[in-house]
Length: 427
Image (cartoon, rainbow, N blue to C red):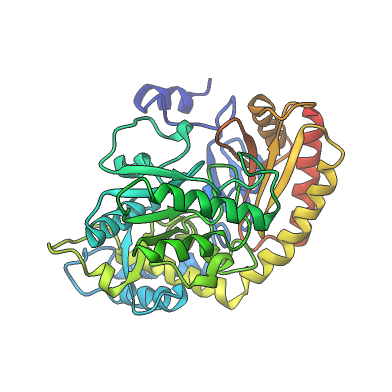
């Protein structure tokens, strides 16, 4: 056990998860690569859990942060803040939500907390709909709506949560249906559920479930849900913490794959926009955002230095069409991995969009999750010079692949080759 690991265990919680049998200290990065304390170089296919969205040590972001730090780092929301206003203007316009207002937080957890506060206040009810296999953060209220028992340490909650079918396409009671019938069955289930409860405040849903293993429903499911929800005035909250900013390639926001009934009422974001800086936030129609009848501030949400990072990062993303790059390079990577998977009995499915790819693992000859092999593959990939993630919900285990959106074709091929070798070592 190295000294830093021993010190970590001495002062930090046992439940604070660490990857690898010998945990890794990452000391610096550049582009799509990082280095550990021993000087080993890795191709990064996880980006600090989908947070290093553009690149490590991106010069444009580094310069913006350095220049802002030389002026002022922080003043709180009690004072006018030009970088916060400028970033809010850009996000409001990009969100697709009419008459949008933006509130900045420090994390996706806090963003979802705020969305739940807004929805329950606006609707005057504490009942919330959430998706099975979902994950929305680690706070008390976010844990209470998380439909993944591996990440929900308590059943206590300030909310009454009812869970809906549909977030996982290839498992569950409707898995054998075609896409059209799958959506119809999920809508029927939603209607039946609403017939047994008081009208909820909102449905909160990740367009692609992140911690749950990058699972998703057929396109249009949440649009069909929204038609039903609108009949009772129930709000739709799109949790875009992992899917936002063009990561899926085909769309800038994950909700746009389900946009036939219009944009969500509330959108939450975090992770990638800061490229490592602590930025989260909520976008909502003005009437919803302004429904609170007491004062509020944010000490650290929207602070000048993180807003400078977000502005520079978003500008780089748009100017270099990283959404288009995610579509092109991610498409190649998915097809390459599907070709490998077809030869391996332990790979049940390769799924995802753009640079948000899940590889679901099972024990060969069964449909049972194989978390032991998932951990072994994570270790083998590291040995080969590749960092990836893992996840999964009820009886599932999946590898999670989410590189920075500036990934090159050469790097995608290199990472795929390392991952193929790691998969073959397990199966």
